[in-house]
Length: 103
Image (cartoon, helix red, strand yellow):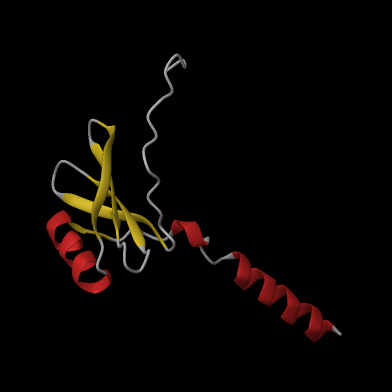
């Protein structure tokens, strides 16, 4: 019985020492290299971008053919990091506001 308790304690102790999944490093590289790789490997091209703050540009690369997408955050020093990837990207049409509606 003592062996079972010791084994269980060791297993739980080892499981607790592992790093959480979100602590993994972001995949970062020069922006030009990431953009070229996204286009070559996945057929994704730049489809949207906007400033998150003065030092961070958020960019979305997407493929109309496969529906895959990748979100990058780009810094002024030319380095970009992959924030997220996924599938089933859809572009919604821009609907003009109705006359008389509050904007």
